[in-house]
Length: 281
Image (tube, rainbow, N blue to C red; front, side, top):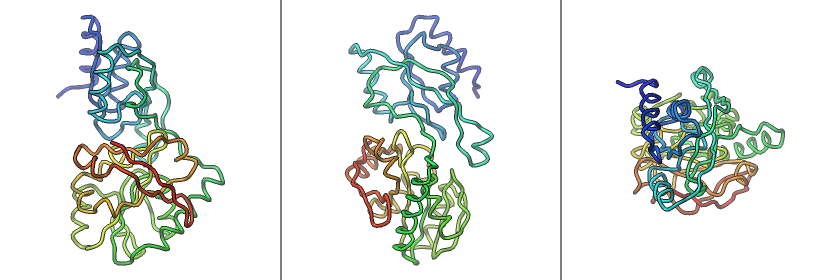
């Protein structure tokens, strides 16, 4: 069993040995440990793994990280990217709060880097947009289907509209206007899915990086997504959030599934309003 101190010690030893590039696998906590050990003294490539992966220092996926290593070997310049400090107490209380912890040097190839997590927009227009999205989704719900509601304030607006409790960072299940599962994990989802022939997943992209699967929604495992099917995935989001994204992203850990999910999809952005957006892996 290793600790954060082990991570900092080993990274420090690598720095002292004069390594040109440090590659690490982990989440925001590991990124903070690496920052404590090396700061801006050596470049790194951060391979995403874990539940909390919101810092801009991370590559989109392990494959993207490999491309970043190649780019560094070929002489790519480096740039500073943010490392976030996620408030653990707030996270346990179903809130996402973060502050800037520091910066790490990474190969400057933006197309392989995820953006940092942006705070949810709470302006009046954003709130109204979420209400319109909720109204449209509810109007078209199949009372015989199981709806798996992913994390995020846009999805929570759907639960609020039908007056059921919704965990902001968890996955909850809805059927015929009733809550049938709260903060459920993969095992709970698969068990519940056996009771319904029709299944739907409703997700919203993470602001700043556009992930719909693979960041902040680990409960939607490849097995769960395959059971539901690409055609039964409903993506929702406000125009303000989507306008800041280059594309939607997936990194399920199953590259074959990621390729299946890739391509264009419609995103509900208001009442009877949709936008076409590309999903990339």
